[in-house]
Length: 221
Image 1: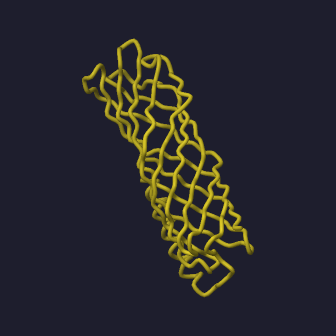
Image 2: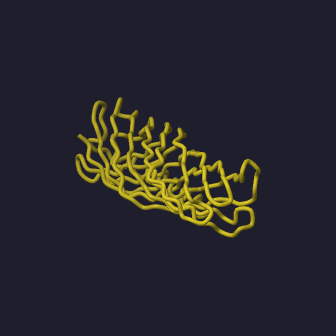
Image 3: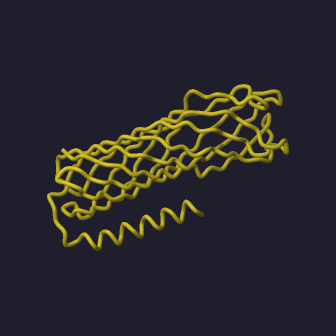
């Protein structure tokens, strides 16, 4: 609920800023221009899971830790309103199985994610100093450097997968080419996890579905 409240507050702020910005015109965004941004992001999984032991469903769920890392993205403006954005960042997450088969919480170790995401954006008020935008696109997530946590997990493997992305954000022009940026994304991302250990093979169908919340600066050229 806290994550949903945060996003709702952000969207309300964007609407308010948009109304205030209507009369304030600057050089703004242009067709054929590029923008590069650097952000500090929080990756906040909204996870759920279905577990099975040796092919038989068992009780339990999964917990994936939040992560906070720097991120870089690149945008190309097809028109002053329409842009393509590609983001790149990598994050490390600790993973816990919550009470599988009544055994109590089990440390499953950690995994790194690399989720390049391409979105098609629509930028409102491109010639105003406050310019909100929305976007939607596709994601492909690479899981790598998996480390098992011992106990029920001697080895662990995550399957790479495609997902979808929704996005909302705002660019606030600080100078002619410099911007402050606030951005929220929702990724719809699933993976199949295989865990081998003393109990046998545990499989999990995990929906990660993270929120990605970022603040940073951008440069348009």
